[in-house]
Each structure stands twice: as C-alpha cells, then as structure tokens.
Figure: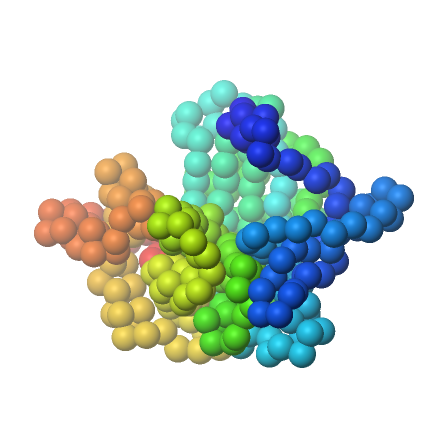
Length: 330
C-alpha cells in the first residue's frame, strides 16, 4: 500500500527481503539482537537491536530459541477445534445478488458446524469460502455446489449454481486457537512477542488483526512513556486481547464437534441473540449491527436494545415457516 511505501521511505526504516531470523543474541539477561541468514547466497550476519519484536505469526520460533538457551518455553493455553476451508473464485455478473457484494451464511451450533461467505472482489470475481469444523471441505466443483446448497441459503445457492468458476480451489486448515503465556515464563529484557505469535484465534471469525491491534496499543503506550517497554508487556497485552480470546473460544465451543464447553455468558447469549441474527437476514439495519458484533466493533450487548429485540421477535414470528436452518445464530 502507499502508506507502507511511505514508511519504507523513512531514513530509519530498512526492509530486509528474503532474509530469515535464525536466533537471538543474548548477553546476560538481555536480548541485544538477532542472527540473520539471507535466502540468496546463505550469507549470515548479526543485527544489533535495543528491542527485538517477534511478529512472525503462529509459526514463531521464539519458544525453540528460548529452549535452546535453557529457558522455559511458554505454556500454551489452547482450544482444539480443527477448522477446514476451501476457497474458489467465480466470474461475477453485474446483476448477481441484485447488486449486493457480500453474503455470509453462519454455522448453526450445536449441530451444524459449517458455513460459507462470498465476497465481491477485483477483476469481476466472487471469492467464495466454505468452512467446516472437523470434516473436510470439498474442492471438486459439483461437491462445492452441493455443500453450499445444503446450507439452505437460496440466494447463495442460486449464485454458485450459475456462476462459472475461474481458477482452482485452494484449501487450508487451522488446528487450534493458541495463547502463549509469555507472562508466566522469565524472558530476557528487550524481547517482545506480538500478534499471532502471542495469541492466534480461529480465522473464521476474522479477529486476528483486531487482536494484534489491541496488543500494539499496549506497546504504543509503553513506548510513549520511554524506557524499556518489555517488563510486564506480555501480561498487559494478553489482558488487552482477552476480549477477543474469550468470545472466540465460546463461539467455537458451542459446536458439538469441538472439545470444551462455553462459559456461562457463552451459553446464554447465543440463545438471547439468535432471534436478532435470524432477523438480520431481511433487515439491513440489523445486519449491519450483527456484522459490527462479529467484527468486534460493538459489544454483543448492543444487539439487545429493546427496539432490536422487538423487531427481531416480530420478524421471527411472521417468517418462522420459511426460515431455513442456515439462518440460525452463529
């Protein structure tokens, strides 16, 4: 993006392309840099640093590097619940979905752990993603269309039935949500772990960037105070992004195929909010409110405003016979 290019033009920013970090440089009780190796030519070098931030994602090597130095690796709180995805692109016509550019069919806990989302993207294409807990998602086009049809969302079924696919299907799996407890193991000063390397959650809920942003706000405040931001950082960062961790685990644990049990709020709120989620299918204002909750822009409590609950109740009562299973609460 232009914003990223602007940052790279700064004299104090340097991008090392095709370079891997191979380990930490530790002097006494402080990290003072990293060991690097270039992918072209294999040249090794050391890079001194006052502060080292590991933002390398779920595959972070920091636990391995700590173990190599005889330090305890962080505990890993996790929620087992393998999620499978298949993504396909389809040609998009001007009249598809009457001009709408986004369709989201949620799963329906506890017994229907699957769903679909379709986005209008560049190049006059639809990007359509299937997801399923536990069971594989299909790649063959006939099976792909059958999966969508079984969700009971007629608009999406009709779209996928007539749209021509472009390109091949791509698959992906996510084995578990993980929280690495760096706050509970002694770390050398000058080392921070950030983003998915600290906490990674089921990407079906789209909250990875939100979690990382909450952590960055903690780091930004500490840097503004001056001095070493590393003491106590991980405890503060994990507190800040727990507001993502807790709800995501509750949503996943609501499915029969996922091990674990939702918290009390996680068991109560789906029943209370289910009517609003159903009504959102035909009411744009409610749909926007639902997406704000899913995207962590608003609290789930915002869906319990009396006017929204009343509207959802009346909509459900009028439409009960025609509502498909696919419209149930996520």
